[in-house]
Image 1 (tube, rainbow, N blue to C red):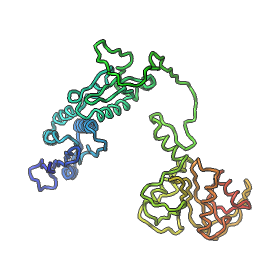
Image 2 (image 1 turned 120 degrees about the vertical axis):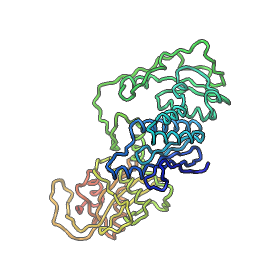
Image 3 (image 1 turned 180 degrees about the vertical axis):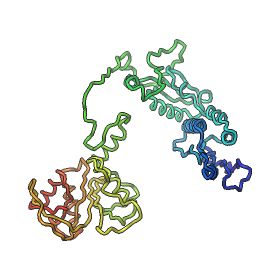
Image 4 (image 1 turned 60 degrees about the horizontal axis):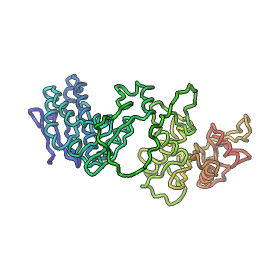
Length: 432
């Protein structure tokens, strides 16, 4: 299909002219309504060119229905669309391109949104019917049109998002399904109805009729050890638990645990090294003039101690153009098994005071000797108390060409940092 442009206003050369563009993609076509110049012209006259709520609601229904339609057909990618005042995008099957063009034309020129609503209706899949309670066979070419394995994968995703367990099996020309509602999901929805507006339990207590087709047996376990089992009971105890993990993640009511699990694994094992970085050694020194891929990695690692210790800002923020800093800002990254397990940020300064490491003892007289200063040290939890921090500080001292006792430490110093400083310089340290 060739890409084309349809002009909605009389003069197509006018910069204020509204246009509909049809663009071809591998799986679908994108029908775009360009209102950019029109919105600017209306704004210059003091008017408002925002889309009515009925307009955006109809467009969102088409977008959601189209996404389900393409995933049902086997598409596994994402979508890029818009429904704001300057650009409206409808991803549609090729057979619906003309209908989408006419629907946008009617909505834009006549304020008639029935065409958009009708398009959404044609694209909407009967997911509610497919996931209705009961054992049944969905036949390819009758109930659905995609390959059975693809269709079953789509249904599993829909069932999972709806809290259902889908007992499904794909055959050569059909898919057998039996959706059920786990007791835990039922209890969750009954306890928090505000999270699931409009939800109705259609699955609990459902009994198949006598004329329900019997799913052919294709082998497997001879005995169902869960048959006639009593469901597990759940209670909600009134406990006052600390919902903050040691990794610094705070649990939220709407979180399903995946975000916390990913962050906790990174906090424990380190930040994974991107595949596009060539890392021949174990220790890398990244400066503010290093390639952006390295500076982005430092920024990502700096987010771990920020969250764990609840700092307001990350200790690394140099993500713009390469630049030279007066105080030689740099970061040391230690990697092991493809993960960054140690991180030290530092810069050079000439403002120091000696401290004998005794609690509540005052700092000594100021010293203006240029020394490297440790701004922050972070080590992945699994690698702590194994000398990683000492290795980083020693590397900082070696690069500067001074003994480790000449390294300056930022104030305030944490308890773990103080322990490390005592081990490296038991007679006292420099503070800045």
